[in-house]
Image 1: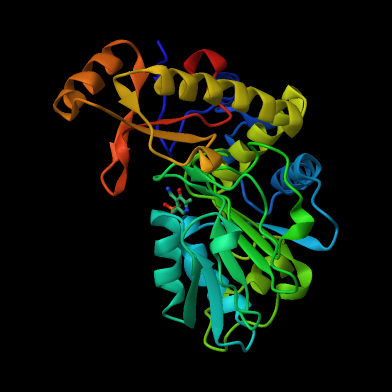
Image 2: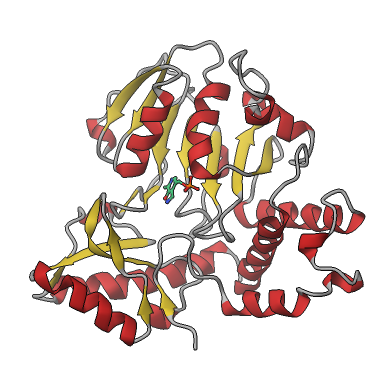
Length: 337
Ligand code: PMP
């Protein structure tokens, strides 16, 4: 029996996909081998990744002047790759630090440049952007704090960089507003091991001189993300997810499902005299709902009883948010919300 899995990442995957994978596992496309056992340079895999990229481009309406890279190293590798590649001779970068992940990204960036923390809330009225910054970085959805930007920041000529790890593909987004978007896969895309980077072409090719080959976006852009052996099973799973999202009808429809799911949960928490969510209502996340109860001493009992009822992965993060957290990614069925 499968549970309702509220884990923040690795996260629940659609049952249909898991069944498809199970059926294909021993014998992918009559090759007599699984997809994990064939070369990333085989014609079958090359054909597969062309389709996967086309599906992602279609879902997000990615303009032609953007490259899509399928990398490894997780979200955290991007915390370093972004400054290494995007400073382009500049000395400072702006960071909007709205929670745990953006702070971690800015701490890593400080190894390479002067970091200007331009704001600490998603409210642009409170920001002090620097027009000389190499880029402005923000985290679209703070997975731990449950804070999400309901809009795309305006940064004029300064490229906008977004960690979209926990909200990519949850609603439509105008990619043309960004210089670079990155997202680790283990929330809304696939199992852990893959990171998707969408980068405007003019930002590729001018890394700081000591940048290792593997950390240079140009290496991966020039080699169709096949420079080294990629995490091919995760990539294949990402393809299943993109096809599944297209089958749902695309991101407008997916967004409606997500909004319905999460609204039900916030409404329940808000009318309850036992549970609470303390995030400013303007910035409440659609994907991760942290919450507390007025009786913290009952937290262990709550989690235990929830699990007995088939509600798994509701424990909050030790670094913040709340004692509990329900992650409602695309793959969470409506009944789970
Ligand atoms: N950014 C965000 C918003 C995240 O939620 C996470 C992981 N939870 C990361 C970055 C780090 O990802 P990884 O563990 O793949 O390095």
